[in-house]
Length: 196
Image 1 (cartoon, rainbow, N blue to C red):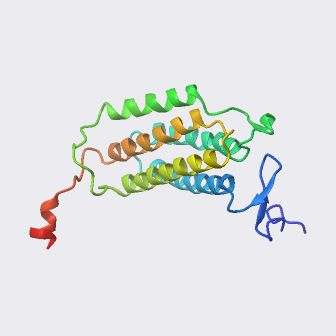
Image 2 (image 1 turned 180 degrees about the vertical axis):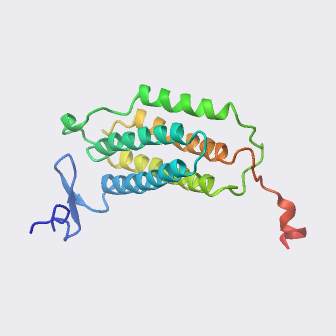
Image 3 (image 1 turned 30 degrees about the vertical axis):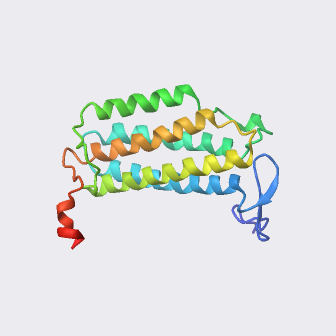
């Protein structure tokens, strides 16, 4: 029986982009797509953990994370076809409307926070820690998009970079929101005199 997943086309270390180009699997477009896949998987797990947490705002947060998961697929079509050879595959492009919705949700969460001015040394809940991991992966995705844009100068990533940059900010705010006021800022006295 023919596998729905296994094609064997990548056995030689190459793959086909949405654009139709066959490239090495370490091409920046493939790397960027892979980083996006990792981020999306982490985000999907976070969403499930939030929903299962029983928090009073679990459904609201879960719905927003579900929307973000769909935006990931818009990002995927853009980074996998940086030369825009197949615009017909793009259901939408990440733009101002997506950024506006993201910023509005961040502002809503941030309005109820009293975050310490110091750096946060550690999350104080597993949900917050998982969200911090997602924020780290979002920053990795941003770096991968920058590398792809450098490789493919015609790649129009202006709105995409703005959204992904703001996405990591949103996730940091979400992590602090999920701590429910119990934050753990850096306390260098823990190191003792001269780090001992």
